[in-house]
Image (cartoon, rainbow, N blue to C red; front, side):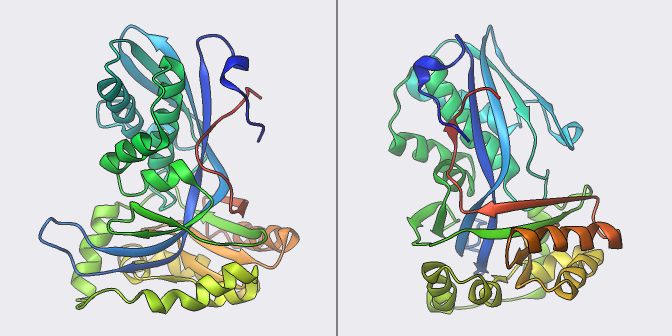
Length: 311
């Protein structure tokens, strides 16, 4: 990905790319009185991207293309459109904008595709309108849009607390290689959390010390240790709603993955590989066994939402 200065972009159009994510660890506490679950999570941004192209318009509108684009809402519920309106309101902009989303991250797949769209829209509208919002202001707007949007903005590797929106950068060395088994059917995040509440009844504060081995593996750049430390409290709930997820989990394990986990609220299954070549082999095993509608490979960590040149 080549970063491009704003002055070199095509006139009156801004293209921004934002990554999907995998939760290396996701620990979930009991639902609080505000309806949210406290989280302790470790995010890694991976090289599967959403692109948002922002162009001037008389009003606010959104369109989408790419895999599963027919499942993307184009009404006022669209998170990228809400992001554009948030920038306009904060900066006092009266102009409209059209956002075109080029989908690359699975829709409703537990990899924060919608959050990546929102983060990209924040950056794109800020650049298109020349509002000059600071990174802290963009992060504040991001947190108001959704729990994963701030991380989509910053990328790399980070620890998330609160609803996942309170971020602390995590030290990580080297490059990690992934294979993803994608299901087109999707899973509702809200439904997964409801199932989690029925299955588990956590009490007491979340124990951050449980992820010390994972953080040590990241610092050492040790994929084998990282694979052994992958964890997701929502995995059992996702499998409860979609029992077929046991199949790609098993296939990846049989293919020698260092670790396998349901990504976020699912249904995407993430398999950590030894190398790029091994990631391709795990992906081939997914394809040959017919346990995924699509198969993707990626590396991480990568940067968050950035203005890019047209390809």
